[in-house]
Length: 186
Length: 167
Image (cartoon, rainbow over all chains, first blue to last red; front, top):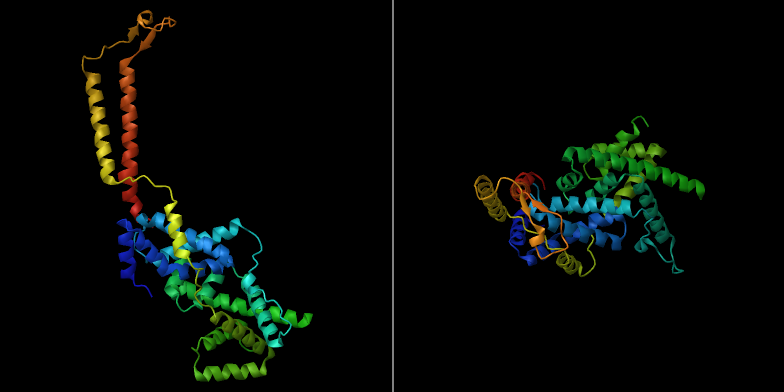
């Protein structure tokens, strides 16, 4: 966990013209930024592009960063907005190769079941709007605090808690419906 | 189910997050035994919880930082509008304005238009009289200087000062 003091030190060094300090900053937050981008755009190649773009935008705007919030929160918001606009610009069906399982001829039922489950959950997640989906996904990543998720969405913690609760409820209902539907189809 | 689906959902979420008391947990599980709908709801939310609980921070591909830093090197160099540079330029503009205004008010400049006899000029082909009103020229220069001064003031002092609220 990177402290606020560490963040401030890096920012001061960057503003003083030390480019290496920005490399340290990128190293410190790249996984967080990449994860947010990945959860929104859905594939690694585009997520990398979006996260890189986010870091470049943050660098360009660093002089105007007022330090009332944490740098990480500010950066996550930049990355989130960049990811959402990227997705809007490139409206197409994302097909994540990592989610594709090539049958090896020895697939056991359990494995197939696991695949199906992941597919059903993804279908349920797709029913949520961008912000709700990201809020739920980040809620389950222990490195993201509720405060950070709230700041990213531009809402207070209590509102986000309610939002996550409702989103989980909707997900449960959706998954229940999908499972019932699948049971009928089989 | 006597309770609403949303009420059960809240209990199930608390149960999955480990926040439900032992008594309420027992009540929930007993109710799920009796009610097929609640059982499905519990199974669906448990599945969801187990799947999402596997969410971890994803590491970007190797060389990510180097690629960001390389991207920064290709950025166009922005012009630095520091308040100090701006104020110095502004002073220069004001000095220029003052000099022009002094010139304008002095007797050095003729009040009327200057008429150039183009026949005296090497360009023999020019025959039409060429009229230059110096006061108009000075007026124009003062106006340009004032506009330049306002732009400088805005870019180097006002915008950075009032822009601090953003970010």
